[in-house]
Image (cartoon, rainbow, N blue to C red; front, side, top):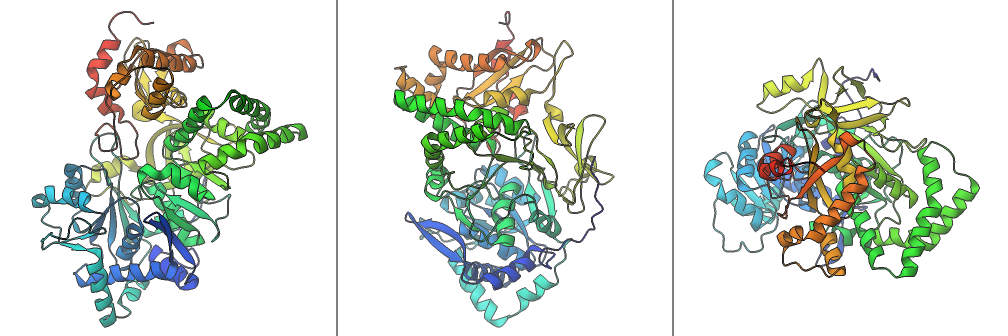
Length: 613
């Protein structure tokens, strides 16, 4: 257990709220580049002065519309510069920001906006506006809807809907007559003031609105305990800004350091944007790191015999160095020479292909990651830092580069207390954590007990003082034979396969374990084309015996790493192509275990008919 004696106030550059830090840093940086975004395929730069001006226009515009401190304003959009302008602008005038996932369906949008008692809503475009219009009658508290991209809406006549350009104009007019009002609101702000409502992704039931104070965000600007972020650094922003991890890495840290954020052109172009930008700082969820690995695996399957041979020799030559680093040892001179040769001949090209050739800090979080995947990156010379946290507490642990402890999520950052309960649950406490769940006092009391946040994660602290996450409390499987199984260990190893996108292990109170598998559409389609396997659509692809056999062989490879009782005896493929809009997936693309188990119950029951293999 670690302890700290921190105080409830926290200062960064003499600032105790994000708006105060914003005013100070934008005044200091002026015409330096703050962010870049593509316009018709060309990167356009925006300075800290531009950032400040737009945020002030939004703050003044909202005040002109009647916003009062403590009012909730929601943002429903993919990542873009307007998202960030609105985010800071809302805080500048004392509002509370509620990010709404752009993948939400109208009923989910209605729930979030009603639960938060939202007064003003920013939406990205016509598609997002339509979701509001579908449920408008359920949302009488919404007074204005501001649209970032007005294309396709020229003929729209609606009293509550306006383009953001109109809000900018209102803000300019109001600002001229009320000079100093925003600065006064900011200076009167307190670290205890609510800054955000962050709705959890809801793997079990409807999302809960976590109330995030200003001091939480200021504290999160200090999580980079082992790397320095500077104004020369570049980061690619592509994960939803509604998610606390992306907000920390793309808004909080750059505000403190001055590093440049670059918005991905769209969710579909992220791989190309990485390759084009080659960011120096990379934060990604495990699914993205898996996609990178899959891309290399696919490229190698198409390569010439010479190319594949060089790749395999390179992996073999550099593996000894990686293994010593993982064991906490110092690689010898020969190990380093082998790696440098492999890097010069093979790995450098792979890193350029992925857009990771300039990265000096790489991090993963938000979900467990396969240790095999981490080792593959380490062989390439890319050490990935694991961070751990939750919406309720922010990022609270991180692995350190020396000594390397991959396979754990490291140790607490300064200021964080951590302990393991008798039941094995991870408990977190620090003075800057969330204030509870909006409108859910019972859930709040269940989660915060004597100041400790009960995370719902099962973990252990190893002999080196490093935290290991084993699973979620509610996901632990107890078989009919009484064996406790942590399904995430198997699932993460299986997802290391380029042909598997996600998996859910089943087996609670059953005689043996089974698995529902979601294939990686792109890679399995490529495999089918390379091996002349006919198919017409996704469902027919999943039904092909050759594809079932392919996934079975991948599953057998993983089975060999586990004891008999932990092995999967049968599996079935989910033959519906799922996206973040589907209820089976969270907005961060994680399968909802309980929902999947219920929806595909017939498939599950079929796996428990007849003898196991």
